[in-house]
Image 1 (cartoon, helix red, strand yellow):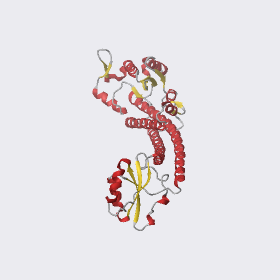
Image 2 (cartoon, one colour):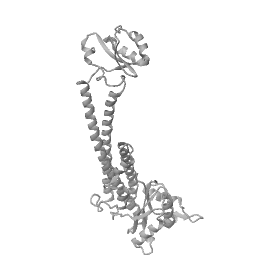
Image 3 (spheres, one colour):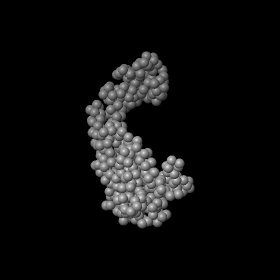
Image 4 (cartoon, one colour):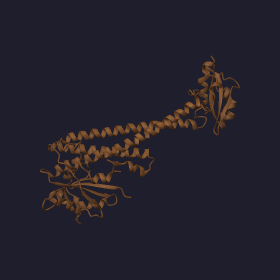
Length: 392
């Protein structure tokens, strides 16, 4: 299925002979055939207009903030995908805005007048949105990091119960009471060595001579599995580190002789606790991911709305007389929809746009094109206010 693509288009009401806003919206709708997209009104609030210099700077700042909004929304979407093991149906159930599908939110968008009062300066609204986005990003990132850490701890502990003798917990394999503890002898120390099955013969031949002061014939077979055999070997303490170093050189794996207090029951309790923690944090991460995605998208669309307003003022001037529409199309039909808009409204570009031999609009004045393209931080010049975006 083609990806959903949206255009936000702002046009002066002068595109209609009467200058009427409803007639201008009709002209916008008629520019894109229903075969290539659907056009609906998009409400832009009446905001406070500052100086020209301030508007130019805000256009640039808003372009950067919008890119950040997009990045945060997509990052949260990726986190939800990871949390839900890539199950696309479940992912889409969580990627909603105010408990509504994204498309429905866009088609019924209303500026949040309570949160972002229209009588505040644009610079203040910008700061509010920027801080809100940062808070959403930090909260979601922190919770997903907590889940990742909990999941890793659980996996490590579970692996210690299911791996081979070179890595698994030895609490369920050995009775520590049968081993020589460090404080049992002033001079001797016992080591646990996991030896690959294909190296056991060489180990038994050479372990006594790999370092000084290895107690002869001290190797005791304690356990074995399909890959390793576990031996206890006794050395004098003063040469213990050298013996262990030589074991590693020969790819014999020294094992830690520390055991969990409470034995197997304590380890099983620890696993049960981590499993419970993992389920709890998973649920918290899912809820916060859903909320964070909603907040990030709402922030994104409010920033886009500010971009449309600022560029509309810069392009069409005051007093404001414009109409804004949301064109809903998809990746397959987007080019045709855009070409139709360009063909219908190319004259709005004035000297910056001419037509080629086939009557198609093209950028004409390179210098003017570059100047106008720089207003909103985008790379290409459009003869009218135009923003294309996808929310995935």
